[in-house]
Image (cartoon, rainbow, N blue to C red; front, side, top):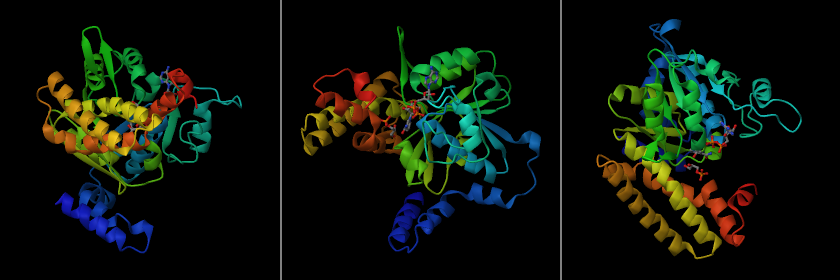
Length: 338
Ligand SMILES: NC(=O)c1ccc[n+]([C@@H]2O[C@H](COP(=O)([O-])OP(=O)(O)OC[C@H]3O[C@@H](n4cnc5c(N)ncnc54)[C@H](O)[C@@H]3O)[C@@H](O)[C@H]2O)c1
Ligand SMILES: O=P(O)(O)OC[C@H](O)CO
């Protein structure tokens, strides 16, 4: 049904005179809950509404806040306000990033030129930002997650759900630890994941893309996350395989670095395609070794093959690896700053 809608939408798109109607039929087919909520049935009082906090405000974190903010305004079951925790930085003009976001509604450092939505409130105080939320969206570079979880240890109470958009893992002495497990174990809450072929800057300007929500246990909470993130230009599918989805988002970065080396060394498109194919096969093998429950079908979702393709074509990992190879082995961080 969804596949048919998708092809129908592409067909409509190619025959559509205006870009604003591009994905209207797709939107209608995919979001019955959104349409129902828009009509309003008066069943949700203020107390039962979910409050969302986005923990992180980088490039993807800001786009995630924008997606969520637009839906929070439309869906009855969510509070309008979306908090966004900002790792405070002082900008070259001396202003604090948080103040500028709240004044201009724009993350001028990590997502310049894009309005986040007036209902996004930037907050530099992590504890304060999460204290009233019952839905937490974690989206920072992976290396900061251990520290963030430690700061929040014992501070999350009540019925709270989390989702991780972090593409990476903690590698401890005992072995690899998925970020969703880190969140679950340290904060004592259930944690889904959202991964996919999602270059943030493209989604920021509302170009169409897909994503995958990985969950374990109840499908109901996964459906709530799908509702919160879905827009006509962002199509989200739930998959009952949290480890598989998260490992796809993590391991594709390694393939992207290899693809960047291939580009930097000018080895050509056939070699790059081979890297992507073999890379995907190795992602699957390693994922299944770590978690035998990982499903083959997950690798055909947006989080799998599609993310390998987009990251190897347009991602930052690819770009920095290409610069590294072209520079003849300059230090990685110097390539990153270019
Ligand atoms: N950017 C994308 O296109 C994209 C798309 C999908 C997934 N992701 C994943 O999302 C996650 C977040 O990426 P992003 O693009 O939002 O961030 P980013 O790469 O833009 O990173 C910068 C962020 O890190 C914060 N930061 C810096 N020092 C910190 C510290 N000591 N403690 C806490 N935070 C600190 C900065 O304030 C900023 O918010 C990553 O795992 C990434 O792989 C990114
Ligand atoms: O820019 P990258 O390499 O971090 O990739 C961004 C996203 O993960 C692509 O889905």
